[in-house]
Image: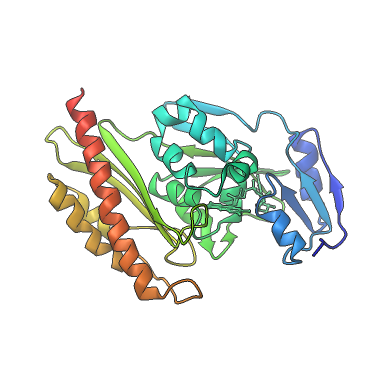
Length: 292
Ligand SMILES: Cc1cc2nc3c(=O)[nH]c(=O)nc-3n(C[C@H](O)[C@H](O)[C@H](O)COP(=O)(O)OP(=O)(O)OC[C@H]3O[C@@H](n4cnc5c(N)ncnc54)[C@H](O)[C@@H]3O)c2cc1C
């Protein structure tokens, strides 16, 4: 199938893009096109205007600061894998990005596109939740910053208004020593995950877990923070103790039966993947602690 007719523009400045987006016309932002173009082809998206943001300057930056690692909306998935700054500041991002589709998709797909598209099984929204990231949003009338947990509100639904653009995502640095890991299960290599889990643990002076960020994708209409697991992790001081907290994940998720898996199978996967991710995150946090 071919897309229905649409107008196309490629603005050279963010102001121009925001003005077009706020004009009231039924417009969509085109970033990497890896989700939008298939939707256009299948007539599941029928915008009157496509605003291609790929020529906008200053939106592909990777900026470490005291506040965290700020990724411009046009940073490509592949860059998350190859950037030494990303690996050093937020290794969870590099590990998660390696699980996104295939290299051709990662070469085009963008951080902001994945966040705005909000697929419940996508890796980057899950990492944003686990890391308590905030989403920088701009419109012609101003800017705002929204915690990831408030941004993702349902299946392919976000709190982004029709005149707004994702400008950046800010991932706070984990307090040191810390370790993180992602685990996922998909039907074929490169497919979206059936279920995925991202975990980050930080240890206190006493060697116990002092802070935990855990999120699950593919087990509900939006990626979810595993609050029960996070609470159970605080104070844990052994790999067995850390693994055992994965049992609590069932209380954090609400999967439904679909063509690919039953709800109970997704719950089963979430527990196993959480246990694996937590154990690896623990080992990495311990290694970081011993290396100090
Ligand atoms: C075969 C295949 C396999 C894939 N596998 C995976 C996978 O395993 N994991 C995964 O996470 N993803 C996967 N993807 C999707 C891929 O990650 C996309 O890159 C991503 O979902 C969307 O990013 P994009 O830059 O391509 O956005 P686009 O396709 O250009 O846009 C997607 C949506 O976001 C909106 N949008 C884009 N940028 C902005 C912005 N800055 N502000 C506001 N709105 C914006 C668009 O208007 C559109 O509605 C796969 C895609 C394909 C084709």
